Every structure is written in C-alpha cells, then in structure tokens.
Image (cartoon, rainbow, N blue to C red):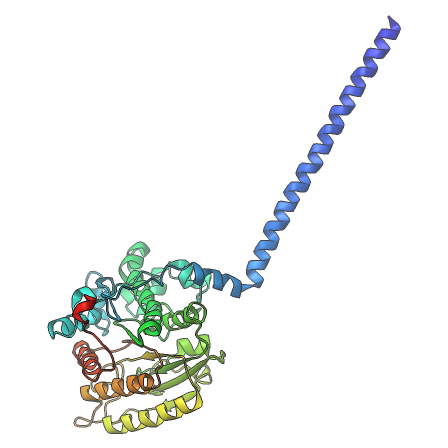
Length: 397
C-alpha cells in the first residue's frame, strides 16, 4: 500500500508540474504577443508623428473633394450652402454674407449662365482640413468664442457651438471644397471660378479676418499631389495682405507670391511680408489708372521671374472706392472704379490664358452690397472677351 501511495503522489506532482509549466509557457507567449502589439502600435504612432508628409499624402489621396464634373457643367463653382444666415447676426459684420448667391443670380438673370450648369462642390471634411491645419487648431473652433474672434462678430461667442458649426463653419468648409475642386477644373478646362473662398488671412494654426480655413494653402497642396503641379503663382489683389498663405507657403520654392495690398490696413503682418516674392504696396489714395499701371508692371515682372503651371488669383473687390475695410479711396472724385475691377480681372486672366496657364479665381473680400454686381459684371466681361466660357454649346447640354 505504501508503494502505491508513493506512485500516486509522484503522478500528482508530475501532473501539477506539467500544468504549471504549460501555464507559465502560455503566459510568457501571451505577454510577448501583447508587447509586440504595443510596440507595433507605438512604432506606427511614432511613424505617423515623424512622417507628416506621408499622412498628408494619404489624406489628399483619400479625399472625395476631387470628382469628375460632367461636360454639361461650366467651370463656375457655387452652392447655396455658401451663404451665411444666422438669426440676423451676420449683419453685424460689414461683409455681405449673401454676396456669393447674388453674384450667381446676376449671371443667370443676365443670360450668361444657366443655373443647372453651376458646379456644386462637396464640403471639406476634418480629414481634408488636416492636410494643412493642425488638430489643435480645428479643436479650437469648438469654442464659440474663438469663432467669434475669427469672424469678428462678438455675439457668436454666446451661441452653442453646434449651431456655430452648422451656421458659420459649415458654409466656410463648403467654400473650401469649392476652392480645392476649382484647381482640378482649371487644369482640365483652362480656368475655374469659385464664387467664394479666398480666405487668405487664415494660417495652419490661426484664423482671423473672417477667414476660418486656409483654402488657398489647401488648394495648392492638393494640386501638387493630385494634379502633378510643380509651380504655382498666387496673385493676391485683395486690398489686404494675404498673410495666411504667405505664412503657410512662403518657404516653398514651388510657390511664387505676388501680393498687391494696402500696408496701412489690417493685418499688419510684418513677419509674413518677408515671404512675399513680389510686394506691391498701394497706399490709400491710389487712383484707378495708377493702380492698373502698377498691376501691368507687376504682372510683367512676375511672369518674367517665374513660369507657373497654375495661377491662383485672389480677386478681392475691397479695393473699390467707399469699401469700409479696403480704404483704397483716392478722393471724392478719384477712385478704384467698378470698371477698374473689370480691367484688373481681365488683365490677370489674359496674361495667364495667353501663356496657357490654368487660372483659379476666388472672390475673397469685398464689403459693400454693390460688390456682387461688380463681380458679376467682371465675369460677364471675361466671357465676352473669350477668356472664359460660361455658356455651353447645345451639343454639350
């Protein structure tokens, strides 16, 4: 009996040892697996952080903002979602937040455009915006107070942010989509006009001056990758310095910046001015004739020094006499006239089209009710001059 008990005890010990060893071996394997997973995750995260260009590339290539536009559409981009209507508080800012709608309404009523031929863009997503903007900046827009500062409408700070996102930032994101798509259309058809956009005061990290998103910077980054564009010229003829795209793109040798602005007004960004390749300062008191002479010379120099594959034209109309924010008025009799705007836009399109350089036009600033009519008149002139085509052949419709 004693021998039997010894054998039984030895068998139990052997079995327990085997179970223990098996458990220990399994635990080691599981711990190694978890470690490898953690290490892989950490390496992937590190790779994302240390290779922002790879992440930018991935976001651009996966974006839905580029889509094929049928031939039944012309290269004019607009959506009713551009217009900002927020319980009337938009009227507290001098910017006409229905300017974009009224431009298209004039073009249609004047017989230069069919409503059904207008291209409607998609709204830029957070992933699209992260191509240029930081996550910290986009998160900052979840504060209504921040949006109030950017739009310069203080009461916005007191509204729930979900309303601010829907009524203020969503229209801006839609216009960003329009600016990005405009580059694709311009390369395919020679020109494109986004009846909106031109938010040239916004940088990757900071908005301001009614500009919440850096649509010009975004447009150019998309064009570099998706359109194989390697040289872009920005012609910024808004009355204000385009400090946003200058800050974002000023160090990029693929971008040439011609900025013709009034240095006596906002944004006073002296740091960004050092990134301007060709700076043309037009002081308060500049007349139409003087302005156009300066522009002729500037365009000649710009295209002599740089051979772009695409032009992004920021065509602000706040240089008009009487504009409350442009302040480029000569006197009660001398002024940058509506005809001066028409001539200005024609000069830019002509110099680009004669060189077969695709041109993207953005309407940007302009703070009077009369601006919509002036913009529409200028676009109609471009059509009459054969620089753009706003009416389709019957075979295309």
